[in-house]
Length: 171
Image 1: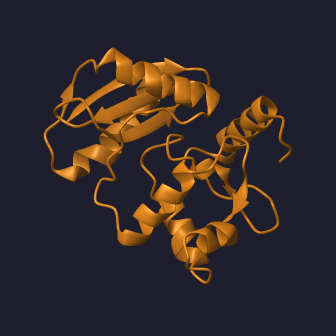
Image 2: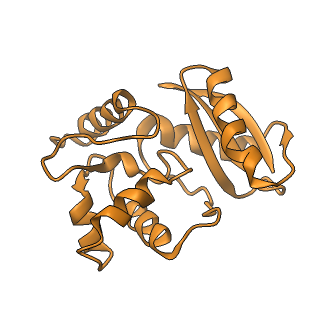
């Protein structure tokens, strides 16, 4: 596993990829490089996998940075690191949302065919380790308010506002 920290428009991200450097396993965010790297260490040191601190393929970094900066999904390859079946369904559904699209946990549960599974859907969003590329920030509470976000409600609000402005959608 390879990890490295890079800047983007709203702070820094620590990118975690497989040993081949081809598949993204995770992204950790922070206001500065040290914060993003510390978050990656907390999350990924528990995985039991060996990891090295080295630069990652510039094409992958460019695609990830573009997605983080614009909200538009890129063609990067993602790998769900030990995902449950419901996490995989939720994350797949989120990959098919458009920038500026906002939906509730209930709507997401309905979209994956399990309309009464709102809590497991919310839990799957909370377990997302591939920040912004799997856009769990686009999911809000039933009343339309932002709910918890792993990297803070302030960042979630900035992401939603940026996407709404880019897509001329209202939140």
